[in-house]
Length: 203
Image 1 (cartoon, one colour):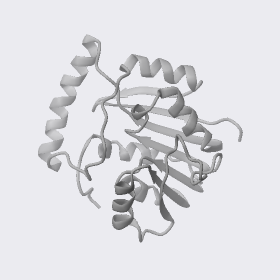
Image 2: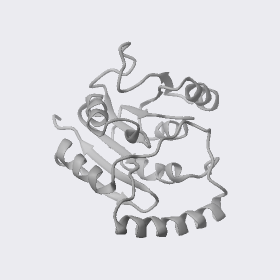
Image 3: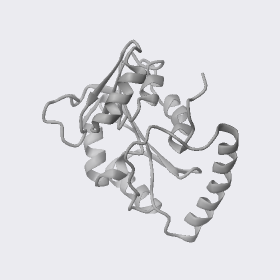
Image 4: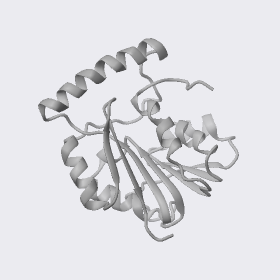
């Protein structure tokens, strides 16, 4: 089934799905927005929770995907969850798309990894800021590719969720990822995003 709209985040949802480990029992999509990715994750996991701190996002997600078996949505902040709506150590897979740059990088990754069960996998699709000449060259190429995708799929659109510009450079994010998550895989993607994958030890 075709996606209802296209943007850079939706573009990389297929990559996120490929990285869900086999036999995943419990998956969590942090910052789920309108629930599009969470709905797709139900094909790869036994149960899926979509979490977002914004009530409007959860309302939209429930309206659009609330009848999907094995899928639930909770209004919760992964950084501060006193009610325990997101149990630590429960999830075999945690995804966070365009989420981490809304907080301090170290605090964000620490909170996300606490949610993982031993042996679980974290997948982040994140944003960073252009600083070097190479950054701007890659960004220029991305603009051309983005335009081609817009011609094919239509203009970028979505549910109008809150946005924030990143403050860390691509290089800073890569260094921080490798320092805070030893053994992680980090690489810059073409369309203004990076990929971070980390497997939690213990299984």
